[in-house]
Length: 146
Image 1: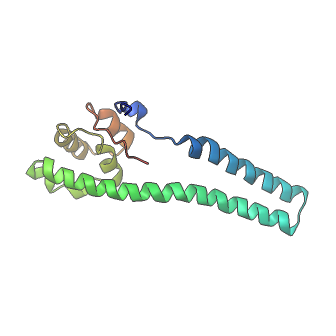
Image 2: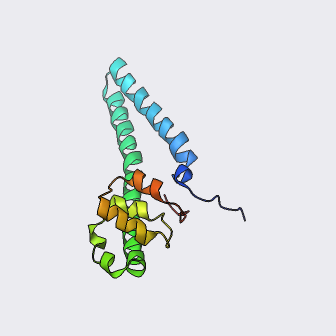
Image 3: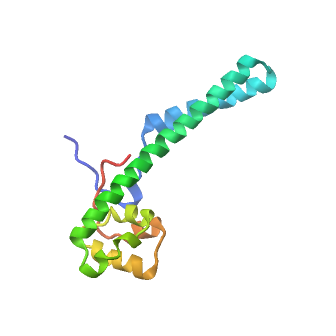
């Protein structure tokens, strides 16, 4: 079994080569070609091909968007449960004050640093997920992200 690389802010984003670097360019090239053909040879067939190419582009975009939104909902639930278990009582009453972006960023914080980091985020009004992720000292890896 291969050893997993420890996650950090620098390497936590996931790219799927066949999806991001093969499928996306093929669909984009197809869409450009289809609209070029409509401009050169305006016919029902070329227009239909362009509309289908556009629909495939939307499908590509929304397939990723819907999967990420479903993942965000699961992360929110997991993190709220984790916060209920780890935060001191005064912060437990403020769990619903976290935005979804704050909650998602906090998923990478270790159990030990979650209470202190949560308090700082709420007290200082830190909203930017990049800033929150950069504040994390000990990363709790998420190898199942989409």
